[in-house]
Image 1 (tube, rainbow, N blue to C red):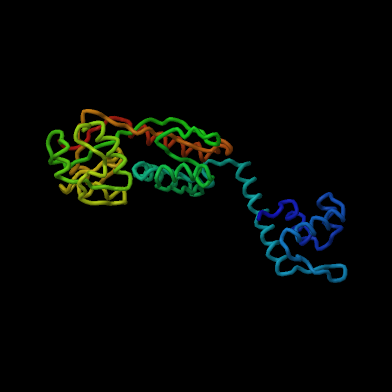
Image 2: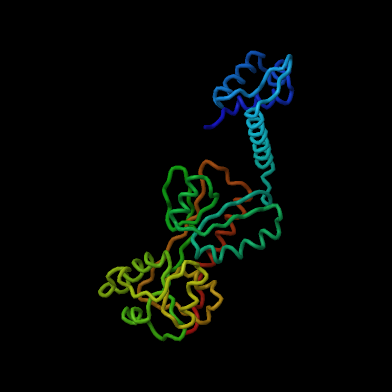
Length: 304
């Protein structure tokens, strides 16, 4: 149940003045209007909010609780108006959601920005694509990075570029592995890995690959930063966007296999249409664009 905002404001003013007439004067209302707001609020709550005591009144327990809510909402409105009026790029909160692989290069890029702006709070959530989209729709996320344009009426999207989906193998492997070689070595899987396999292997091994459910598994990890670690030690292979390779500390032990057919995932920066792009959101959005551009830039894929 959402309590009526106008009735709450009248009730808060009544509690502050302690007098119906003075409340009416403060709010530019009539005294019967103040009384009517009180009665409607009490009906909505389902309990009396005040107890008359001569010319004054005291609050019931329900009245105390409703007053705290009213004051809390007033404070939230004050903070909102202050934030909108100042629009300081170094003040406020920014909530970002993206894939775990994109979060790996994005997080360290955010740290200098946060050091330079102590008043800026950045929340970065690594989540599956469906969760990122849902967070944007629910308003829990300010900026989301998706692999597609959601084409949603409440959302706006800007294309940032693309990121290569990579077959990552131990650096000691030579040449381009065949599908039988991969099956003997085994797949270091992760939550997004089976979808990656359907994308990349169907394109490159159409005669041998019969679906990700038929892959030989050597392990399963759900922490994006840990997934390449066993591969760097010669155990199996894995599938990740290029960022998962570029940011791994054991990169010297890894190599991106040169498959004949490349597969790329698109990168889209998505935000709400009905929310203004404040200065702080624009600042962080520029940084996200810079990170995406770096991922798209060609660079050495490791030994071999």
